[in-house]
Image (cartoon, rainbow, N blue to C red; front, side, top):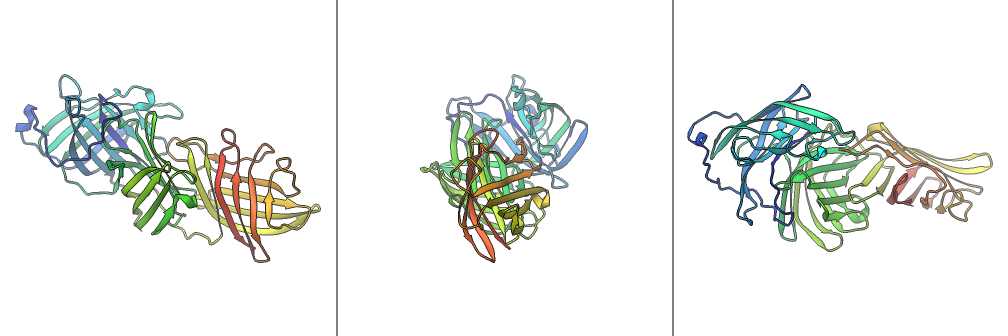
Length: 444
């Protein structure tokens, strides 16, 4: 999915509350308010000469930062490309500079690729201008243009010929939003992206309001490649979440911190809808959570009954969950060793999973480690996951072999019909991530 967002300058202090959308229209002093003009609830722009266009889904006005007596009238609307593969978000105020006719704002755009383009990546949020051509209390029409930068690698991208027109509180209501209460404080917002990577639905978004260029929200649900209704829990290693405001990790959930339950209510025609609630960092409440979004390039595929999964963590925003199908499991004897070999995949076959254990005696229940890591004759010969799949501004995944690894594979059950066990350990930081909750189940 692709995203575009414009936001007003002049951020209030981080401690300011996020104000949910309101239904009252502030008075507009612009002289164009008395003139009538037509709008069609559409948007269009060129990124590096490539044209993107579509319809506007929702739009509303907020009055933000009233605590310090200099409130901004902020216009927000979201839209979707005609081919359903791109999203557009614009948020800007109507008095960003002295002329009140050319708001300057933050913009982020995903050109149907994996790299999120943004003015914030250059450290200068004023690389985008947004002249207002016409405005009335119930509708608006304008343009936008400027420079965006990708984050990794940092490359300049040019935005030209941006136009938009919409009537407030109207649109086609294409889903791409979330909401929850954080200690009884509302957190509404929109999703930049929704993708399935390694059996995990990853929803990336931003809350409405300031500082829109820096706040981040991510919800992860290990759904499998076939997203279907069901209950998913972080304590089982199947849910992760964070809400980050610069220098403050307001909410955080992984498989050992917090307790969050997500219920997927429906997944039809590529659109997933659900609810969530619980706690983050063991004490912070998350109440009344809802979400809906269209999954980018969704291809529902039946999941195998034999599955592998594990989680990794480098830092607060690099907690990831992986999973996939086990294609083959077999017991072998080679070179005087007994071997358990498991091969799997993910990402519709594009990613590969490998686990091989060995012992001088028949493979049995118990702990297996890399040679030298523990005093044992039960060894991990190979354990890795290779993937070229990426999420926004994150690299590919590789869990390497190596004697330095503290990875532990535990076989909990094995017989003539199959094997099951758990995966844990690993070092924190490069070159290996810290391995967290993991498991595998296979039949011979």
